[in-house]
Image (cartoon, rainbow over all chains, first blue to last red):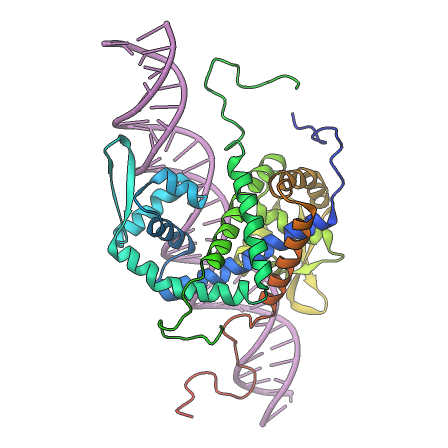
Length: 178
Length: 178
DNA sequence: CTCCAATGCTTCGAAGTTGAAGCATATGGA
DNA sequence: TCCATATGCTTCAACTTCGAAGCATTGGAG
């Protein structure tokens, strides 16, 4: 049970510097995302999620499965089904069967999809440059990319969720102490 | 640079380093936010937005207006009205009139609200520490906070939207061919 | 004082998002 | 082979979110 104080070790008292960095990180990204969303809607009639999906498909080499896509953009599966429906109806992607696995659906970007990405990307870059890169020195940019790459890799490497241990016959709960 | 070339041509070709830093930033924050959301729901039964609102109220000294709150968390006004309704119904905040301005509504955090923040904050910090700070050196953390602070301030300082110039007697629209 | 625009908040309708449940295919052990 | 479980995707209902429209108050210009 996560008792009130989730464990001794006494949680380290909050480090103001850490908390501050975390809060300002989230705030800045929120602001940025908001602005970017405006630009994408105005110039391409798509949402940020849709742009991310298309960009990932356009950048990669081949088609991706629904799961890979959802994982890539940190999105719910059902949400992706919905978005894929919209994008397909708009003629920006196609969904087809996977010869190797009949359960899977392969998503492929169409020419129109690529064209749309190419059309909005310059403006997109321009907005991020104005908002994100303008106030940063070249050094900062490098450092930022480096830092966030490490954080990303770290999180991706962690157990996907709270480890779904339903494999063996091991009783799922109560791993006992230690 | 920002010589905004409205026409597609002439926009600086995409700088892979910039684009990469931007993408990984957004991806990492998405992952982080997702995990944080799980923790908050599990431990406190609240969403990330609700936590942000309560934290802001708990941290500040006095009550805030709806607009100040919405601005702070980068949220739509109507969305905030909705969330404030939920939080008030849950007894975590109260809404009252502002003696100085009858249009405004002052939001105050209740004892229960403060208690909830105090209860979830340690776990919250723990999660962010594990996901965000663990892979970072002390130096990185400092740098990150510094960088994002500059970015945040930069964006906050920009014209809120596409400059709403309705102040002076300048005819807002239809300048009638000057 | 009297308008008129600006500001603060809420209501409303449309669209997006999510987790759980459901269906179909895959896989591995008995 | 057969079956239980895992995996991939979709459907469904509930909830959340946003922008536009609406109402009330404020402030400044005439």
